[in-house]
Image 1 (cartoon, rainbow, N blue to C red):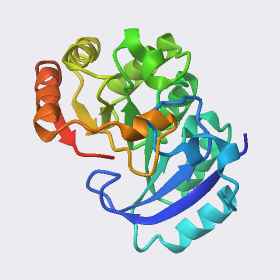
Image 2: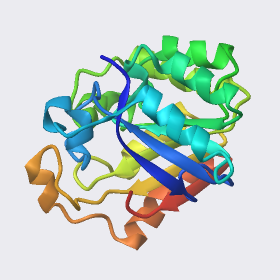
Image 3: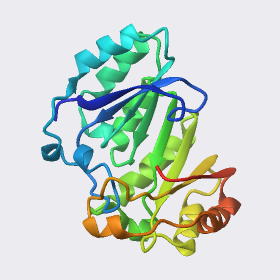
Image 4: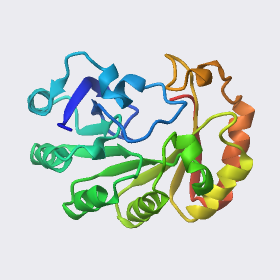
Amino acid sequence: MSLDFAHIQKTSLIDFPHEVATTLFTVGCNMRCPFCHNGSLVIPEEFPHQRVSAEQALAELSRRKKYISSVVLTGGEPTIHPELPWFISSLKEEGFKVKLDTNGTNPDVLSELYSGDLLDYVAMDIKSSLEYYDEASGSEADTASIKESAELVRNSGVPYEFRTTVVPGLHDLDKIESIGKWLKGSSLYIIQGFSPKGGTIDSSFSMKKPFEDAELKALADAARPYFEEVRVREYY
């Protein structure tokens, strides 16, 4: 699968902590989370629009160097694209900091990127407790690879966050506590509210009511004993 982008968000103040960034959205994902509202990014056949090539993206970023300091690569799932290390190397040569959003299914790619000193921040999605990964990811999840990626992220020396998009019916206090026990001692964990806006991969989830603020706080409180810091982020 060639590396190209659905679109470019030219300026973001929220995607990369403490940085002014441009965000690039890759197309294609190896998971099918039923609550995902980016179906057109996950399933390439559903994104028939003209895409931005890697070369076009690099040219645009080069023109924007005086306005931004960093680039966020998100998706979809960026690590399914073999050209990703080359692309990030090109970004680093231009002087950009790079943040990667990933589901952690490709630890070999993560290891290569870390070994090349190509990453400045990583956000890894934790779909659920290990026992319920298939249900939350809509796929036959390779939890051994996901665990390996989590350890790479934790031990990399590069700033990171783990984050879980919480959905009624898929997540509860017990599952969040189980995640906490798995990732105990990690620096930052984010409870991220689910939003059905724009539709979901599984249409039944578009009818679900998101957790209320008090419920999000309770989920965050369940995680706090296990992480250095826990935050709540309302609705991605």
